[in-house]
Image (cartoon, rainbow, N blue to C red; front, side):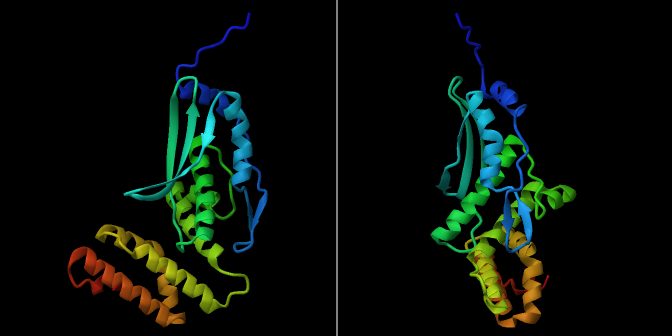
Length: 228
């Protein structure tokens, strides 16, 4: 006669699964940054066998609601009916299916790493992020940059690359509130300032849109913000 141990909730099962997680290997190359990294498949292969072994299912749907679009990573334990969830915003440089695919893939990887606690130690984000002590913020910023890079065709000129970033920054400004606009200006400040000397027309478009969006959000003349 086989004795079946009752698992009261997902955390008990998760603890056992976590003991068997592997460290994701760097199995992919980033052509834009010239580094190697662990892609989504590597992270899945590092944790899913142990999760399933201990009765935990993995799902990562794309969710849309009044707060925006994001990937929800769900670990569900059918035996107890309990789950763990992690949401990661979709940061897209362009509003098209290619960008949705690229952004959702990156968000799934971030969400799965966060919820399981595994570390891939990427050259371009995780090592630097750990030194900065702000892993989530840096990872999200890298996700935005990656989505922009993925939208740029091979052999693009500097002007075309700059325009892709300018368009993505403008898209990031649209519809935001005052505080969110200020935060996004600060996030993109280095790129915007770099454009001022090299691509003044694109720089002007960014500043104009920012000021218009800030005026919409506050109802005031806010041109001084762009100079801060």
